[in-house]
Length: 417
Image 1: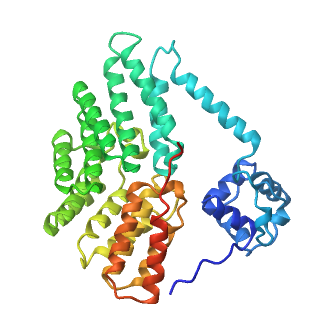
Image 2: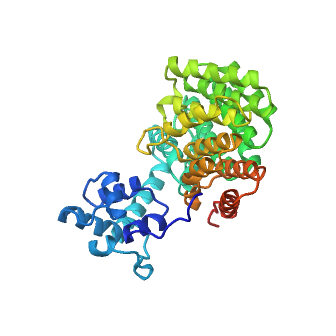
Image 3: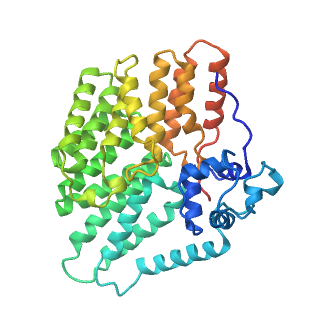
């Protein structure tokens, strides 16, 4: 039986929990304060395994977390918790604000002669999307789309249209994903369809295929598997190159599984495995982040597909591989949403095998996600685990885990007004 989560072991541990951070994040905060340290070292300090450290590291920790080192390494005292967000000093906040103002100016600079600034902004946001809370990305994404639309309506010179229409399609796709993550299916569909029209206009087959992958994703989570499958087929008809082809085959596996067709599901999973071993980068892969699709994501999609086929003999193995693929947040292709989804798939596989304790262990990391990371797909995955758990025989272990899941589902991400 899983025990109730213990009290923080140190003030450093309490700050980590209060801010919804991982030890990797805590180490990064210390690095920003002037001293590079590994997450394992910070974890040992936070758990009390180490009780002292070098003066240089100690000073950096004090700057990062706004408390004396002796307090940080001492016992948890709620009255001493800093009121400011961990790792953000007033000076750092000023620098962040200055960067935001500079970025706004750059996006709207009337004398801009080329559009590399807009393309770099799109690349940065694509890279940030899988690892950054959506609350921090909405305004930059909307600002970028407005700047791109303005550039389309007021091009600097003849011939800019193709380049700008491509940017319109990319930014529209990213905002479609944001709408989807906020459970606004209608807005997501509008953004995708408009973006596809831009890709069609310039004849960019790979971009059209990627956007159909987005449509497949939106329809899958909106319980429209036939429409999801149709989108994957349209995408593959447009282009079967780059990592987009891998995404489309992996998405087809999920759609077939939702339709209950185990044979087609496994066929699509096998196709994706073959492509993952042989694919070459396409144009969109240069953007990285959400515009590329990796072997790790394909493993997660395979686990997700098999989770709809209770008792499949490969479910737990593939889900375990997917969880392991996202075990290290420092990996370049790590994504909190995919990591959580893989963990839920492993929980589902274990529940189908009657292992409630194992399911609880699998989903534990998901239940620790801060509220600002509880996007729509994660909440639906957790609900699926809860629904499967409810079908299990009543026991103390089952009931305790059910209570945890229900409490989690009552606290979704909330956007600021």
